[in-house]
Length: 242
Length: 260
Image (cartoon, rainbow over the protein chains, first blue to last red):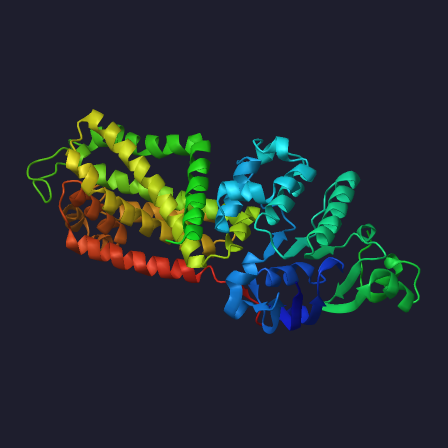
């Protein structure tokens, strides 16, 4: 399970949002940290095939977009920054619709994530309209949905933005646990420093380039700083603090 | 068909149907709009606009009878555009990303969307035709059956046209403007409300605009199909228009390229 990019570049007009980005991550919980406008969401859009790079390549589990797009989509689960649930449908209808898009029957879909639904306390909310759920529950539904086709790679783009502290904690801990239990590769994009622990694989991105990559604690030692906050400040220009 | 494709097709159709029935005002306005035209507008204009014997009708017909196929096409046109509006909504709300993240081929996914929309159009047209019987619009029973493929093809064409437009439009507000520039010209510059020979008497250039409007072919295709007849010219035009619109609709859903 891996995500590899080589010299990946993407322009908006003349401005490079992602500029020759080399990334190489494997199993476990990987945090992509960067200020607003660093290129995180553009990178996600390229990793999910929604955007096409101007140059460079992406390989996910050894597959590339040119030849194996279907295999990539099959092995990838995504939680986007903006909620993508259908508010007028129930939780179950949202889940089974997504499963159908992956060619999975409704019964198989709910079987696949029955344990996850229990852990995320969604079992009793299956018939509720998404509109009636709070932000934290909606995010949980999106996480359950992203796991419905049993992906090997899970991408989460600022999945906890706008949530209260308890919901953020619950979701970050849960996804961290999932990456260990299921042995999947998680890429967690965030600009919230308190979501990073000393053991996490950390990738700091700014101005479309990777500024540092490694175990969070080790990176702090290497750069002679006390914590991730200072590391982040020292490596990113115009960093917005959170 | 591979099971994966079947589940996907079922899922997309089910979602569109669920969304349609949840938006009760959409169903209601889809029926009220053409019924108003049929009951009120046609009653007022039937004396002014006499319709002589013409194909496919074997005899003199009432004005209500004449405009019924045009109103059916209006339902399909509105549904096609409404379905596209939902695509703009989906894109703004992000749910379009979910669709495009499917491992199944993008053309297949968009075709499923178009077929789902066409099925909803078919349902609305059949309900409208049943109501139309109440105001003495006489459709032969076989006409309901023979018009199904025509309705489906027209709905697919207008859906693809809407899909193509939806990708050119970045915001919901802009879409409302384009609806006015697409729906009304298409509808009024066609044979939906008046035979084209009447338009020819009034203005030759307007007549030619109507002739080149593919919506005219949609109306004529359905007019003949409702009476169990085939208008080959209209059919050919609609097939060509569907192919072109589908091609551009599919092309417009390619990933954004990050070139300088």
